[in-house]
Length: 232
Image (cartoon, rainbow, N blue to C red; front, side):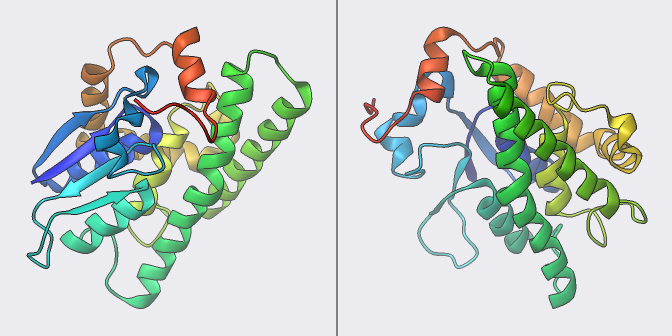
């Protein structure tokens, strides 16, 4: 059994999509980041960076003690390696998938995250910051669009690279992106959107987070963290 510590963010959706795709048994452990539950000492013992998702695998492949993992990319890699699904076994196929997984983790996610922050959540709209991250968003969509020009999926076949990237494209309207400007991304996006496991993952999100509105209190918790942020 897997315990998944989760909230309804793009990084959280990655893991529910993978688990729904594979049918691995898991228990959902919601961590309401708007209420500061990510600072609970029990959660911090699994995720010292106080971010979701995190997970504990109570039945690791080596038969030993439960394994706790944080960082969504590391979780996807672990689960794909454990199940043998959505990650090729050959060195070339595996490398192809992993480089695009790292592209999402190191580029697409952080840059689109800053887009979300400065266009939606920042108390003061800073034109330079908005333009900076809008342009980088457009650049990264262009990279993905060119990658998908002659293929159905990001790598050779549907993989953890697609699973990692998709949730960051879901809020494209909030990012002020028109998918008609990126036709290959749009085709790929609609293909993944139609997968039953993806649909189930997003239905789970609706049940977990019934009030996805950022309040002043949750804004302070989410965006006011520093070295000495109090721990719950």
